[in-house]
Image (cartoon, rainbow, N blue to C red; front, side, top):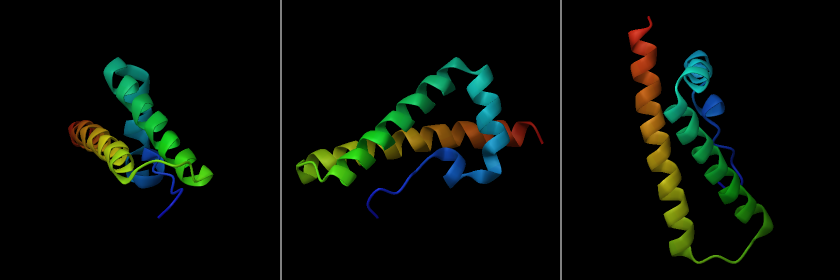
Length: 84
């Protein structure tokens, strides 16, 4: 779906507390999270504007976003499980 916001708080509302805690206490998580959000924003802006980009470039950006999201999700679930 075009222009879909993939913010982690939207996609993982059950992990909101973990997202906030890690963002405030883990500099690497904060850095990777910021990269993820910037990439998601870039992809959405390209989709909204209809900016010409080839399919390979679009797939590459979306793959980078998915890879970052997987990495962040693993860290979030590990944090969540260790603090229950």
